Image (cartoon, rainbow, N blue to C red; front, side):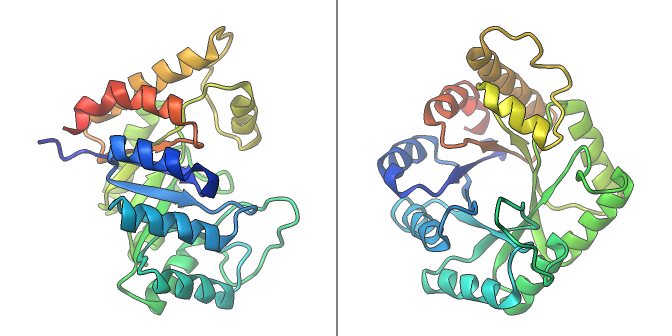
Length: 264
């Protein structure tokens, strides 16, 4: 039996419960992370989380960002999770969407990890990492040093930012292991099937390394690219794959059907 793990990220959309039930029942991911975008109420995130955890029996990570939250606001979210018996979190620095103001309690994601663990050490906290370095980091070396602080603070697993160059992923994994970071790493994959996604990547300074230049059928190319990338990552023994679905159920399903043999 394979020990590789397959996980996904979805958005908390209450009107998609039936789709969530159907596809998660088919894919049976190792866990699901629920993103907490600025336009999504935390209560909605918790409702979706509780449904997936309780009714579908699948472990769930709730995204929790610190950049726009005070300690009191984080405690309120933790108490809401506590009420539903939810004990897994993906701790993020977070992004600033329109109208969101920076708070000063959590300068880095590692600060949020420390705070969550001090609030309740039994909460399982995951973090993120950047194979091509965080956009605000001076260089990859200093970024890995900050990552070590996050892991030492209590992060038990890492989900990577999208990277379209597997060689950079392998180099990154080797580097973090050299720095004594030995927690599981789930390699983040985002299928690029729409033009707006290419613009989003550019806006967020994520390079596609010319992989998608002059592509005519972006939908099929993006699916095939993800399948090839995932199979190569698994051949090189990454701990797991984390698929950013963007709630595109059909695209995700097309990819899953071609990679599922890796997880049997």
